[in-house]
Length: 419
Ligand code: HAM
Image (cartoon, rainbow, N blue to C red; front, top):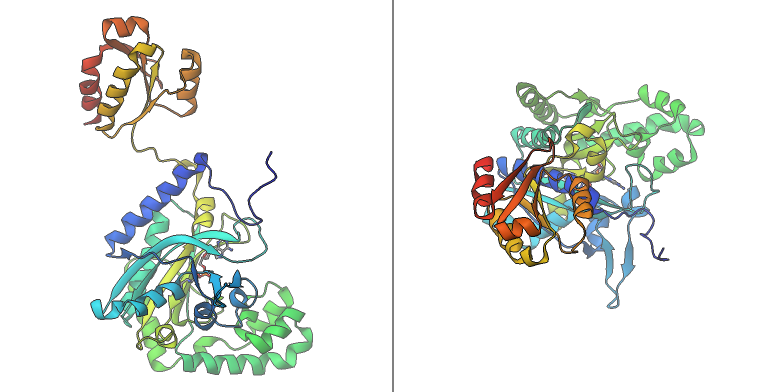
């Protein structure tokens, strides 16, 4: 074995798994286009400042998890830990808001966070997500949430829970943070070291604790909904009634904490019971102040991102491989027939059939073994006799039925099966 292996927390996606990835990607591309979203691709590298200003210096993502370095020209650069800040950078840089007052964007790609690897948590992972930039209306929130829900349904996921909250406007959030600090201070001696630290740096993160004693303290404390303004409450109620009218089930979770600082108003997460501790498949929310804080015009926006590795872990086995077209192996054991086998392959591919033609000149037995291993539907066998008679044996593998067919009739034979 080579002494080079993948770096800790990163994984190769091997050919045996790439079908599943492509299948999920197809569902994503298809579903977002049904909602009118257009793809945007941004670089993996950005200036470090973009993330620290966008996501918040005191978040775990920025303070502990970024892959950052100072480049040869002294610019501080980072691998993106998420994509919302990059999309906003691109939106501002290319004046996308002038091209259309509402931009519906989506993306797929790798992100990097230096977290402790475990099941469902990698250092390089893949996200897909959407950002709808321009509308402040609750129907936009409902559209984004329902799009996330729809993709996970189409991917075949079960046992999902949609948690919904609102962190209100900035004003409401600040009042809540003050109230939370005042409430928690007298309990400080009972808090863990990390929560004591968070009380100073990022009090909302304490709500995310998994420690039972702390959960009990928090459960008796203030909740954000007590601080909503009338507008905050109306917006959130409207989002909920739209979701109800679409029959999308959700639970309200006033303690839902998103790990990034840019959120305002609606926040949400979809979790799965099927994948262990790292159960958040998809998370997002409104970020009405982010665009302005990164140098753009004051523009409302909402989006989500989902972890593709986690979704693939949660897809039930029966849904995992969705074979779309028939696979045919051409088992050619007569070297003089290789030319006609190539022509036949080219013709059959025009029917969108997956054709695998032997290029190793292996024995009939080895080629048949390979066809079975690849889950082929048919084999077309051309030996010496078939070559001389310009025929082939066409064998269906699931029931073993076999027919001799003239080579010039094979195309029509498969055409009639396909259409
Ligand atoms: P996030 O909650 O940090 O949100 O990440 C979204 C999803 O990415 C998570 O729910 C999870 O499935 C996946 N994920 C995060 N970290 C890892 C990891 N280390 N390994 C595997 N999967 C991971 C965001 O990134 C926001 N940008 C979402 C957003 C878009 N908000 C508004 N627009």
